[in-house]
Image 1 (tube, helix red, strand yellow):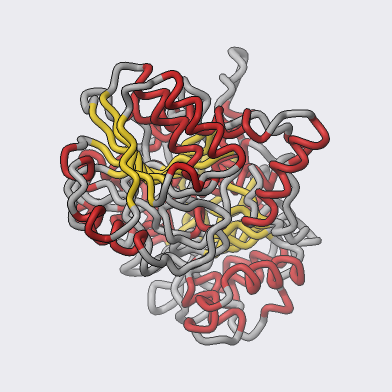
Image 2 (cartoon, helix red, strand yellow):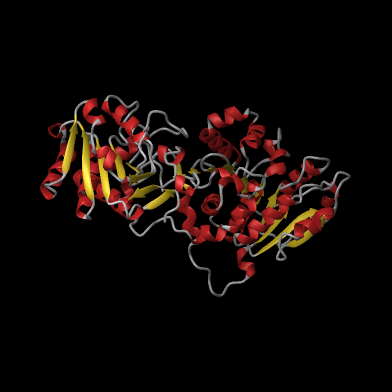
Length: 536
């Protein structure tokens, strides 16, 4: 699923009308009906709504939604910021049809602040639909819209935003925005815009503060009309990779053998968690290669895990002795994917050992944690053209790799990720708010799952295991395999947050909800794609 700018969305609508003969009024009709259908499904017991409309096309979408809700039996009022005779084009037609088919509907024409503050429709509704301004709007809000925003902010009703929370710049890549309406849910159309994937648009207090729904409704634009220059897509679109049932004639050899290389004295948990996640994510076989002193600790994570003891140095780190003679060849024999780094340590031989493993391994390799730190100042050794290479740094690790400060990394996440991935011909998973999956061809997928409960030690190790498992099972589709892994990781954490408070979630709780994540479908029965939030 492509991610568009506001200008590209407008061009998509025009191409749909001009090249495929779909009138703009039909697009508005489908958009408004999609909003209404979402409200009926998401808030089935409300029954009373107020639609807040501007005078533009966003307001027209709201007028269509009002008509559809009235026809479904809801009590609906419309609050229009302006006079009815000021509407033009498709919005005017939507108003005309509303008044024709629902002659009893009340449309409050608001022309001054006094009228807005005394408007009963804002107090009596069980649900507010924000259709004041949409994708084409450039902040800030002005005039009556500012007062209306303040009134909505102080209300207790849930708010469903049409296209975007009014006042939010569709082209914004910021996490937050000042001066915009609050929203509990957002329904947008055709494709997500930049703000839909990068912004924290919604908050769902019912689930402990995890993100509320942001859904994309198809309204009739052929895929050929959706053209984007951003090079950005959504990770969730790749999840169909794991939604096909496995062949009934399957065996463990068909799903790959992952070698997890890591661990050191005091850091047995990291390779254990990575290995557990790898098994849970579907790898046929997993072997953990760890220092001999922690073999029993790592093996205790699950009996399905195989072990390969490594010689160790005086501080419990892996020793360079493991590379003597044919030891490395024996270690990686019949391995499908290698995951290097969880708990490896930066002591003694460990960094040089990690670099040698990466250099000598010809199978796909996932590099994380201390294996990333081993390439600090030595990124010229990272070359994904030799074999598939996936790096999974958090901002601090990325800063060390790039020779920048964390602040500089965070200031240009997309640009930096793209440059690094293309330069080194590898896949870069830059973790953080809206984790990015940057590919060697310059394309980037943006992830929209996950929550603050993942801010715990071990989360990165879990992700490493899931990425390795996906690569082992889908070696011919690296792009979608890595994107799916990142999406599933965050999605499992979102499921964990539905039954646990975010403060209490552990990394292993995420593993426990991987099954929920695999079974989840992003598209609901109405054809809406949930790019954020969990559907009921």
